Length: 342
Image 1 (spheres, rainbow, N blue to C red):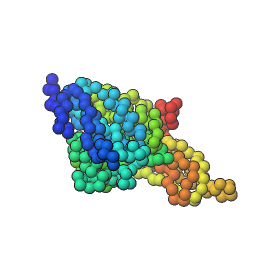
Image 2: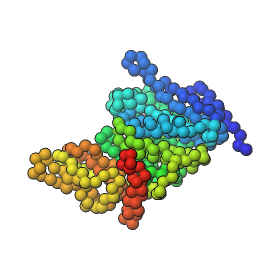
Image 3: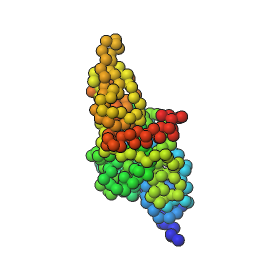
Image 4: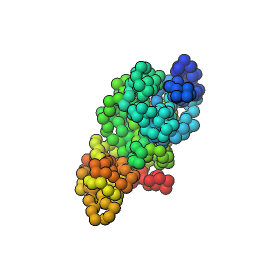
């Protein structure tokens, strides 16, 4: 029988095996001297296992991940857990308060890692997260949404060249896995340098709760935890296996004007298919916007007006022999969740 594991130590606190504790890491102070803390919920299992770090709202206006974290904390029982689960519902506490993607100095926190103790605010917050949490993790799930006024089909982004990260992505069971390069200064790039296997979940739109995206995210994390041997509980099973896309491309507006869209999230599109028309308010000019490739719409703008060159549709590219199968997978996903959102 596996021995009970020792206490988990964080911020000079000891969390005994089989217990849960909320820990506040001092991050900064507001102008009025009010302290701002990074809250992490630690669920320390009875037996040894991986240390999974789940975080949300690195971009402060991306709300779906916060509710995924809230539901996850309620679902997991540390007495039935192997390993340790660290959950940070809100990383960018400043952006969350202001309902904005960025920090007060307009920096993107997801370009500040690993940070430093003596840098700007973003660098200091990134360093706190890096030194106190990421360095203790073996696996990472980073929760995101589309930007403001942009929606994303539930998808996993990861380096598919990392076999363990790809396994996490497949077990998550979102309809699409997109191979995505790591960006300098991002949390995922920093995790990779530490040898922490990571995936990024994208779903929904900023400043909105999307029930399909939230349920898919919660189920996905439970599925990953089961595959890592942390828990016997898994999310509800789906009717499909996720498809892997090696690349994607944004389709941009051809002229300033109104956008009359002809497709939705999850639609299968073919090369040269008309995705939308760009027209002026007087109706005397209409320019078709065509897909440059065969693929599936995994992201799109929700604003029906756009300047020339603005990104409108994000198309994931699949091999031609797999494109019909990918469409069937997305159809099965939408069928599961359509009554509420999609």
